Image (cartoon, rainbow, N blue to C red):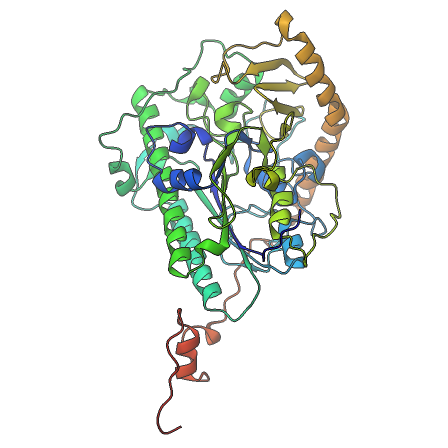
Length: 520
């Protein structure tokens, strides 16, 4: 799709582990999220958006490449992305954009840019192969890096955490980049990704955000932990997070949810701050904003915590697209996912003069821009989510089409839910006689999507390869791949080789009136 208008700036704000079910605009009346809610009210609200995989690195690889994780091989949190794999940052650079990343993207390997021209911070997570699952030993818990229940039992207030130190920098760097763009002579439009780690566990928030919830009810999970989990993956999930190592009280659960909600409010504050800077710089009308998350958080539903589940609290994410000048407010009900972001961004960036590059690799997503413009609602669209990491020993697939959601895995019974009438996923319709035509259709889609047994062998081979390489690289002198931002102090602020007056003028926005002394 081509526009007769010029290319807008693009600001993508990405949260981490933010379930759609923990935002006011998605129906949660307990959470304080006014800026995100306002963005939803004034933009295009995607009601049924799903992560392409409920784990950080796989979700982000799908988000960046437009490919399902089984295609781009982003299997787990130690998966390697080749430098030859195009991302939307590559394509947008070809289309004339200045591309910049502030914050987390959890790239693994020596290439820590993957098409971004500029990166403002290091990553919060490692770039090495240290977190590789082992499907040949599915019962083994890797205590070094698996989740446990400490985040729940220790939930509460903290003045500073590793994650607050990081996100404060991510937000401040993104603010600075918008100011720098406004006062720059570079004529290119900006694509800035501000990627925060909150509200990802640990469930610890600052007193300011904890106190926001002093007089608000925090509900317990809608579905408590059953005596017998309703599907094998839930049981594996319990083991993966070592849920029975401690006793969890209702107070622990409420505190964890309250701290999580507080960190949602922290992210909401950054959304408002970034919008305010756009307004201050006169860029709001010419900037398209995208708000999303990599995946959700179970937050105690079914007794489960964190992500790594294809159930709604973990798999369903917020997705909002806003542009004051081009888009009227609206809601899209058809299922969508991360892989739809890349083709959407390329549609947004296209004009009559600037065409989209032909994709080098197949793209699994579809552009959402026609839906944003109200030109079409895609009927029958299927959102795909895959899980190929720890906590399973065979590929897991979720298909969401219309009101129905289907989950399959070679080691588990099939699951089918009517999300419209059963949003808590309590009634499995897979064996219901009235659902058998629907089951046949989903099975056909799943069979055409992948060969699960072949994929399993490819994943195990890839896991073995990365474990061997990692074992070698940690011997002797280590050369880490973690990103170190470029910084040239000799060109920052004010230095003796600069024309002081002209430098101060160029660094100011809006520009002051010309300085014309009488003597010149």
